[in-house]
Image (cartoon, rainbow over all chains, first blue to last red; front, side, top):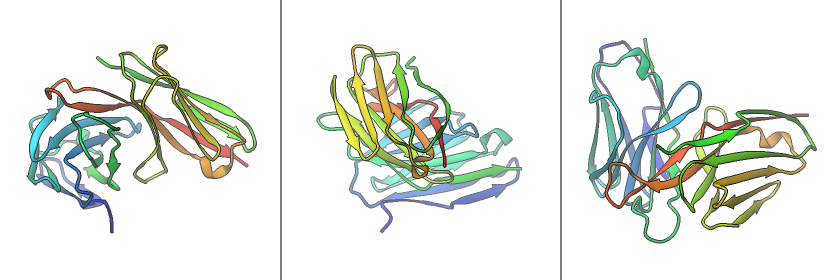
Length: 117
Length: 116
């Protein structure tokens, strides 16, 4: 059973389209994240949700909108896609993003490679 | 703004050799993580370092943390081809936008190629 699963794995689309990426985790974790990895492999956090509540919202265009229907799911919707949105998007989860005790170890999904033409 | 800098960014080494990857960070933190990413794959947690002086070892890899110097190292002993991957360090710091929450900030990664 995959711990953090993302769909689709590959997404090729035209500029201006709207697309969504779905993420589900079966680890019972409280916090989920979206990271963007660009062509140079640089990983940057985009959003974080803790128990369905948005807790981190880094500087990303408002064309990106996360939605968390429950704590096991975090979806990413992107409007009006641009060439610069081409990247690999990783979903991740951790037991808690609010550090109390113990480490904040992230479990990553396999990634969704988005190509905008 | 937190900066996490790894060097080198690219490392080509022969099998059997030793080498060290360095991770410097610019703000106080006592929690540092190392991840491995194989080409086209996801990231896998390697080491969790939770205090000054922490040292962890797994096979040919050993990671250490010096919080006073804000430095972590990943030492590779007698490299083998299977270690070829990109290695990321990440630092756990308070989030800018979430009260009481923390987030991982990643370095740019070190792409390691081990040549037979």
